[in-house]
Image 1 (tube, rainbow, N blue to C red):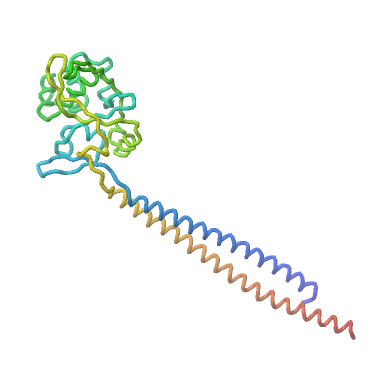
Image 2 (cartoon, helix red, strand yellow):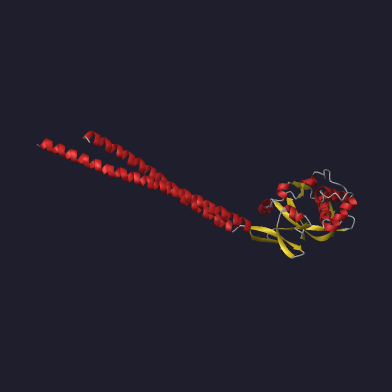
Length: 296
């Protein structure tokens, strides 16, 4: 190989080795990113292990049990085959959230309790029941299954009532809750915890205008109500574990691929370095030979 060709070859080899070194550096940075990603996934997994959820106590023929809180579960007398305390949820304006099947039928608000109870029973509680037809049948069914006292109290909360001191308590009015939110546990917990909604529990009796007695609702919260329990969210933890293991497998697979690319680059670089050293020796010998010629 002539002097010019050898020098050109050295330049070419140097350029290719620098290019491989640049590629290797980029892969090393990518591996550092994967280390950061692993740490992020691990931190999120640890956070998920602390996940909790609220459940309410229900009494069934088999004994006391716990069930996830949702708006629907908290306003239905017989939830999961058991009985439990009854609640209303209000927005920041104090309006009572009611299912859209009811609110669509109470504009304007009925003047009589019986008319309101018929709307609730016919359009919400027993909308699929073909054996109930008259107002008396609907109300009798509500008394039978434990829904009567609750919805009676809701009616007077909506329109207003007189307390034991003879003072008039103004009506709250209502707001509509969608079906999606009504069955969404996470929405209810988030809204209550953020203060965007308040929780009230069916409790003692108070006087009405006609001197009858009804239950009223007292304010409570997720943190103080003895019938609401915060427990580990095993479903979320299990899902987080599955997600974490999959994420780590994906990261490991990417890391393995990068290691293979690095190994390939290292092999190529070693081969080029060997050739570079060989050509460099040829150039060096050619230079020595040239000097000897001139010195002669």
